[in-house]
Amino acid sequence: MIILGIDPGFEKMGYALLEKSNGAEKLLYSTCVITKRSDPHEKRLLTLSENLERTIARFRPDIMAIEKLFFTANQKTAIKVAEARGVALCAAAKNGIRVAEFTPLEVKMALTGYGRAEKNQIKKMVSAILKLDDPPKSDDEIDAIAIALTWRSN
Image (cartoon, rainbow, N blue to C red; front, side):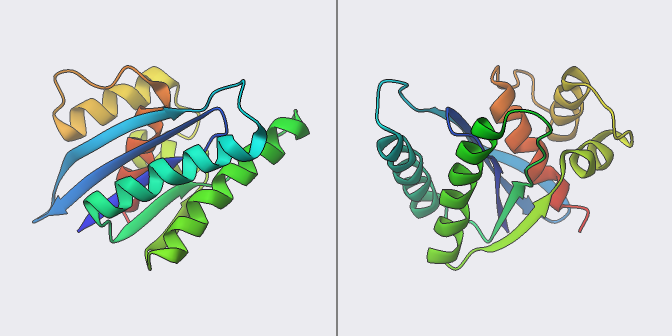
């Protein structure tokens, strides 16, 4: 089974693909797609869509695990991230991929057992679970991997 983890974002979208087989997980691929600030809004969404569609075509995931949005402050940012999340959900529907949604709290609990875990704790757990000697540098990639790993407990 292949799980596509998505850390939704408008400026940066992290995604990761894990293969789950015989109770073990293996990181197949992860990346962070960065959109150009100089591009118009719709072009930035198209960039996210095209990159995600290429990745889906290449890896053919069975499940998409995506982070639910939780915003307390900037509504303008929240709307843009929600639109980017919509791009990912649309890609899942278009390609017949089942979707599982997780809050940041659920991701932290699944990986560390503590809902207020810090970024460095998540990174350590991702590295330990997947036995990564050199984990990705991008927080967006780490988050996407963590989201994909969260699906394993369901």
